Length: 316
Length: 316
Image (tube, rainbow over all chains, first blue to last red; front, side, top):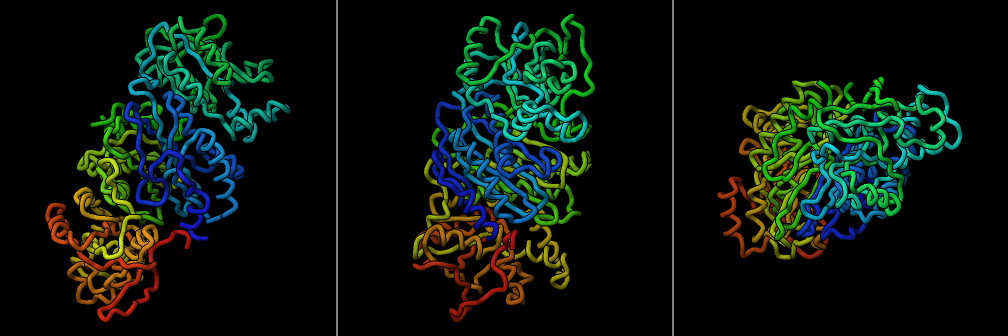
């Protein structure tokens, strides 16, 4: 099958909301009049964002999930995506698996695939996602205020544990932890419901993709505030609890978490704790916003902990 | 400089229309309430869509131009883009040149760069563009009707002549034609003004990126009609006129034209001819829509001409 046939066969599914989806020079969408539109893009490159032997279904899931995670961080409902793919070959089985993982997640959140471009080249995937919030209500990075609590969803460090064990940088993970780490790396779950539940509660939010301290640092810089993070409060997998010190770098700076870090006034603690149940994920209060600048990781005595790395930068 | 600094320095320019541009998990946009939103994506890969030694400024221009051309084909006003870049190295001079070409064109059309993603990898560029038309008025491929005239803008075949001469597949081009061909290949001009002028006049439209017959074929298929194209009417550069037969494959099927092919009722010929002046480009009536299916290229006697190739398919 040629390019156009492959695209048509696996990606041209009827759009649920779009006026016109795949198949013209551009899609036709009709955003709700009382909403803001949010747009974000993430690109994934083989050997940098995923291993060459990743299952195509897992890659399809993750390619969409990392983009939906950006919508979650705005508190937005994702609506549509466009996908550009450079593929080394027109491999139908690979494309079918990729499309399966991609659409399983897209359909779960009612996201239309409204356009795309496929070409031959080194395996590279780029997704642009569009979503909506009620006008003026999005969760911005610049909205943190001194006195805010800092919260994070889920468990941190699992994706980084999977990557590091696969690369032989750490010892093999025990059963249970290994499965959880690989599940997190390959099938991260974007916190869509949580993001929307936080719209009336949180001040600032970001998704944790480069590592907690790095992404929280973006909130602090945009808000002109400082953040204190309590190392002992960082949520970890139960099997990593016994040796927290060993995993601290993964928890605080590992990346590939796709959790939400957010700030909120202290008087909303009860309401935020209630979100954990409705959104189906653990929520942990991990620090506080103070005047100043930068992000500090503190031990139980309030002493600053220095880590070997903070966050993931593709060019360093 | 690292990834984030390079992006900030060259791509984080203040947005003109967007509520929030680069720098958060997603942009915030507020589309006009009485408009439809159009979204399209194009990916460019080195060695496939451009030569490895292309000037970065030319590549910046073209990367955006091919996307704006999709908006032109819908009759849409482009509003915003997001850009994902895989770069083999954090080469500041290259990025500066690329940004220069990209923003020169973006600013000419009032297009905001509202988001992006940069990673290390084989040189790959993907742009998603968003634009607007008055609600319900977009030019769709599926709207051609038997009896319509077929029109095309500008001159065809120039981009293909540049590629073929560079690859040594044809003799070196004479001065004048060579400059025009390279200008077209490297700095194509999206037909934005023309697309919008055609909104009340044309039925169906598409941009000519894969070759006239191929892109017109998409209109014919989507509209369930056939198209007859008159080979003698295809607009060529004056220096290619003397040997039209030699260039017919480039004119009809070369690709890299970024012109608009469109259909319109015969009673609008005068109005359409008037668009040529306002849109600043030549318009040529090159055929007609008839009942049936497929696209036929006809010589002066009405005999079907077979070409060696029709259109560009990356997997064949």
